[in-house]
Amino acid sequence: MSAWLNAASAFVGGGVGGLGSVWLSGRIADRAWRKENRAKHMELWRAGLKKWEDAITAWPEGDTREVPEILRSDWYGSLRRHLRETTRETIEEPRGSGIPNAADRRPSWGALIEADLDRIEREWKLK
Image (cartoon, rainbow, N blue to C red; front, side):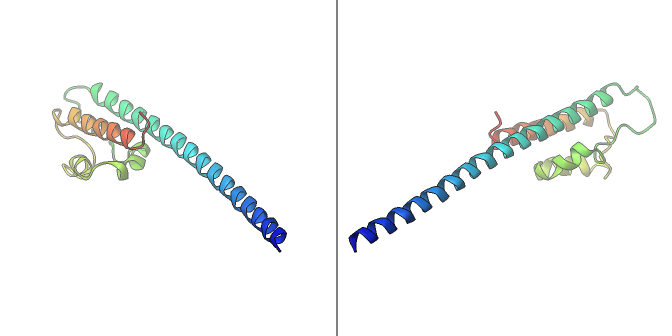
């Protein structure tokens, strides 16, 4: 009887250990994929912000056309849910369009987004 009990416990123990190993390797792969995906998002968001800031900086003084809109950009759309509520409100409330209407507001938007990107990067442990 003892031999059967030893054999059964070895079989069950090996099975559970094998399942644990599969589960653990799956978790490790999931973490690696998540970190890589988050890093790609961070690159996309920083590149989008840079492009938008460059367009604002190059905007001719006195030009009456609307400056490049931030709210309709893909990069902002994917970043929006990660921003602090105060950042979103600051960007989206002034005219409800995501278009800065005063030169002094332009740099502060970039600085707010940059600060949130830094925060997200820390939370995601990318830095």
